[in-house]
Each structure stands twice: as structure tokens, then as C-alpha cells.
Image (cartoon, rainbow, N blue to C red; front, side):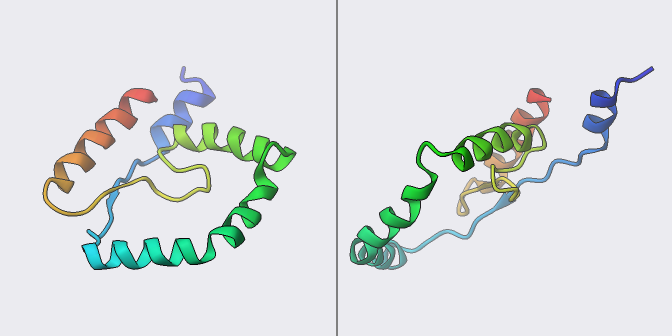
Length: 99
């Protein structure tokens, strides 16, 4: 007889996606955008610092990690470009072992 946890582990399908490779121009543009809005971004993220919401997100992150997802519920991905298929395969194997 399987336990409830084992049953859920068998039902959860792990998927690992790949992100698009950013060009150096896109990276530079993103850095400039961050520098421009740095104060606003830090103020916006301040509300999650050592709060009940942050603690809940940390707990949720642990639960979601068991399903192979990020703390916010998105699918785990690997960086795009050369070798991304191998990295995705390795990550999937790593996630399978954690179950």
C-alpha cells in the first residue's frame, strides 16, 4: 500500500524548460534599466523582508521545490544556448533524486 506522499510523488510530472539566450546588448540594456530604477525596485522588494509574507513564501518554496517548481509556482528552467538540453536533462535527474 502506498502512502499519500508516494502517491502524490508518482502523479507529479516534472518538466524542465529552457530560457532564451540573451545577447550582450540585451544584458547591457537590462543593467541600465536596473540602475535607472534601482531605488524603486529596492523599495518595492522591501515589503518582503523578514515579514510573515516572506516566511510564508519560504515555506511555499520548500513545498514547490518538491514538485520541481520555483517558490512562485513557475516551472524550473535552465539557461538557453549551447548545452541547454544537457543542463535540462541534468536538472531533471537532480529533481527526480530529491523526491
